[in-house]
Length: 193
Image (tube, rainbow, N blue to C red; front, side):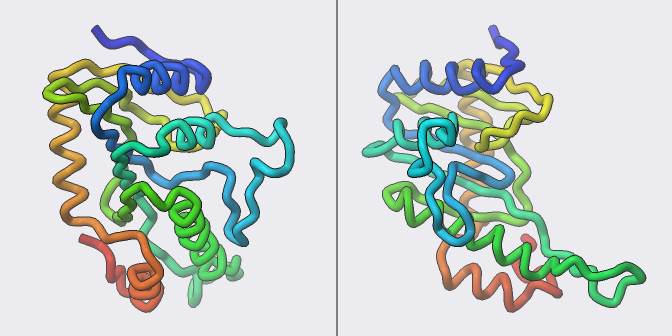
């Protein structure tokens, strides 16, 4: 039976509970990600305990495990040539992508991919032939937006795991080369699947 997780505290508490079962593999899908690494590679975890994040603690707890992280990113849309003033969207987009790459460098043992097509949000834990996890609207960050996620047991977790693995197969490795290709094709939607 699913349980509704209405707070960020409940969400991460359940993720850590699932992690306590010592899963063989964890697959995470999120639309964007923030765990305390800035676009200029500053680490907010070094700024003191008040800057600690649930997301960062959770990723730290995944160290040494088989982890796949699929990050959905928006397709770049420029405001150039439009009737309103440019807000330097190219620079902001580049900062977002650089921040993701900096997170990958911090958590280098994880397998990372990006997709302009994925908007999935879930964490699936696989142990042998058993699956469980969390799905719903909450991304991998510490957002305090009013949102909800819910627990999922074996059957829906297994189906969602397969779905995310299918998206994974069509996605791009998160590295400097793929980001450079993405930036070169910003105006054409080069990475759109």
